[in-house]
Length: 131
Image (cartoon, rainbow, N blue to C red; front, top):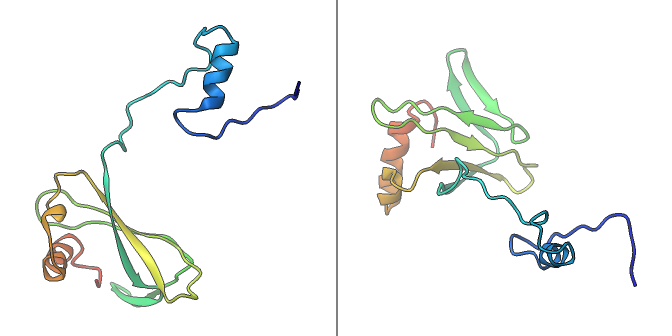
């Protein structure tokens, strides 16, 4: 026999640990996970690779963006959905960082198949940000 005060089951949604605990408990439902709808369900991600260090124009002049800081670039599209671009912090030793665009599946970005098409999309969404 094995005994303890804590059992950690980190084996996923279809957990064998949780199923065994539920069986030992007489199938009373105390170890059955609850599922909730999530606003994040169905979202799609596009990840861009950017240089870790670059400069942007601001109303106060040029500003260097630190690779160790997270930034959110607000969309400024004149019509339709305005999307944020999230720049994830990095240590900078590799010379790159990522920028994430998160949208619903029906967004027009998913119809783009080439670099020029994405540049036009980006110029419309973030005309104030150098991509």
